[in-house]
Length: 170
Image 1: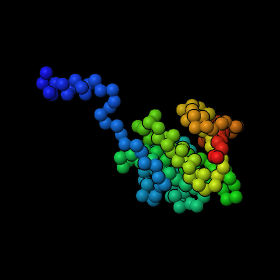
Image 2: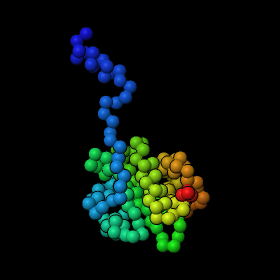
Image 3: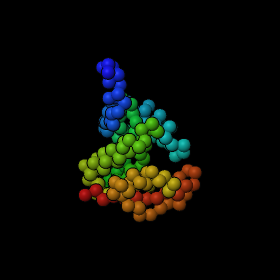
Image 4: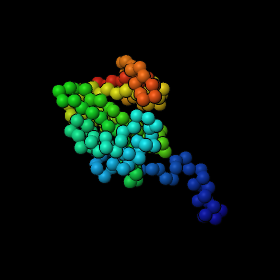
């Protein structure tokens, strides 16, 4: 059998892909990420979107932390967490993953990074709200150890309800 034919046969029978995407780099966002953050927000959310001005303000805020997931120089995810002075509860305000990257673990990586920065800032608990009809996000939070503790009726712009979740950060 010619070498080329054997190589094709080996490649065709390989159980693992030849190309695996690089793991995303999760880091604190900078002003240079602003365009990517706005584009991700526009592509991910139909309602309740943050404006460019809001993103800019959060990037400069001492009471917020914006994290981004970057893979191969592309912004593929973002999360924003808020803090209140004198409180030990941090609030995950938003987490977004590019549609092409969903199901690859980026949401879980962003969530773990948010928890890490919240712990570093002295937070003992992390809270969040999630649409009651967003089962995928609820599974992500529950797998990460969050428990539902309440709800908000008509919380979102379109009248959808929200479930509230919390996790102790020990």
